[in-house]
Length: 119
Image (cartoon, rainbow, N blue to C red):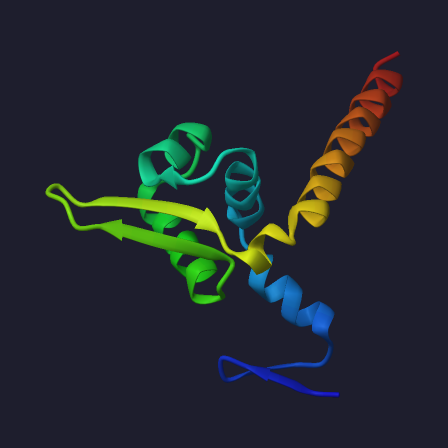
């Protein structure tokens, strides 16, 4: 079965899913929005200090374009913009939680192997 999404071809729904949530900062952004929502851009930046603003905005726009994140612009001066997960974005909670838990386990594995190699 071939899937076409945004003029790209995918062979399975798994490939499609990975293309949507793949990206250096997307899982981290989703994690932040699962912990607290809505968040302003500056609040996301505080939680992810290693990402530069340009990259963060790009990743947020991609997530918004894929309907994972919803962006609300308030008609005030200066402009106020908030981000939150959409309904389909909130369904990523068990996936993102599992990835983060696996990351903790992998870190323990790496540290254990590092300690054994230095003994």
